[in-house]
Length: 252
Image (cartoon, rainbow, N blue to C red; front, side, top):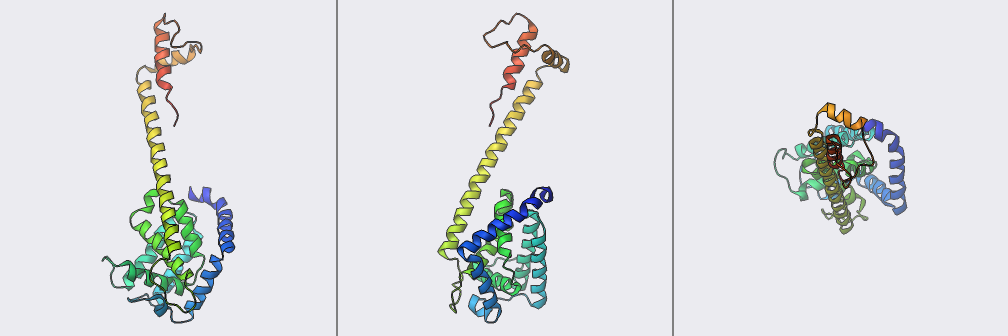
């Protein structure tokens, strides 16, 4: 389904995101800082205080990011992203244990610098907007926002100044706005599903009031001029009116 729906939309979506980042200069800043940091001193600049993946580990992460760019499904993308983040956790020696944001964010940022794939920002934004709300909770939402935060941290580095190890006010505002908007979308989706369920239940109750033979007779002898105030001089008209009233369920 994702392939059928999103394959034709992928190119225009990507083009719009690229144009947006080119206008505000964020794409150029990210690309330049990735290259500058990769040249040396990345661990010191990013404030890494834990273990990080070795060369083979970085190569595995890079392969995951390449696969992420090739797939159209946001679910497949976030599953690959989870594998990337778990690889970072493993290198830190804390797989399956609690790790502080202050330690994980620099280590993740270092790995993204070593992979040097600016396009990852577009992939993250693609997932943030197209994933179902159910995927934005738990590990999926945590690691997705962690990668977004890491990229914004790299993007915001200025000159030789060390990274602060935390989000800039602009990045915090962007995440808060995104979280609020997706929460409203999830609430509207929930209300829509509840309304649809209510309509199905009402139609089911109406359908169980009569037999299939009676229903067939109703549709074959339907009188559109019968109203609630009209004459009810036959049993068929009474059944017709009863079914009609049950089927008039307000739309959502």
